[in-house]
Length: 180
Image 1 (cartoon, rainbow, N blue to C red):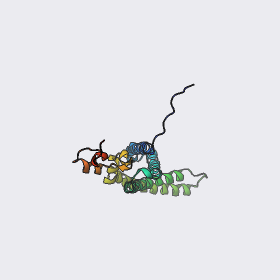
Image 2: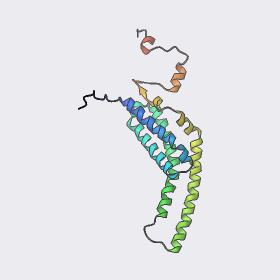
Image 3: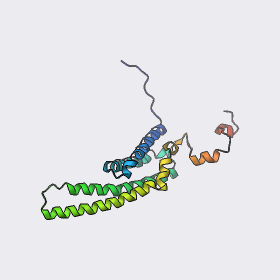
Image 4: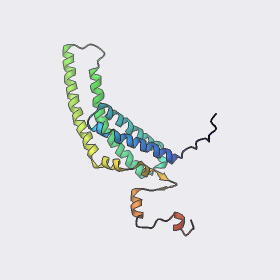
């Protein structure tokens, strides 16, 4: 019988950081397949974006409101771009798998509809590719999910790091004249 010391639970911030980082990395790993129009990559990326949106909501206490709103907007825009392509994939698949036999005339109509859906999908894929190459998504890729997290009641963003870079690195106690 193993009597090892029980594992100490992670803090909410640590759990949030892990969840955000894993989901962020998954989104990034699916980018090339989604840009290429791979049906499963588009689907998986869309699902992961939805999971990250839910995680931001569930860990709202860890992310400052301004940052949460900014991230939610970016994720909504990404989800919309992915959803446009995914909707066409679902419709095309549904049209291809009719449960009842079709007459030649119906087959011809379905084939023409699938052709129009594919054209619409190509257009939506171009919009997705434009979004993935755009400034908003590029900024999202550069972000570190760790920077989204509020630590010990304070939030450290890249902007605050830049504004503090000219100052010496002192602890809050030292700034207020207390010994460390």
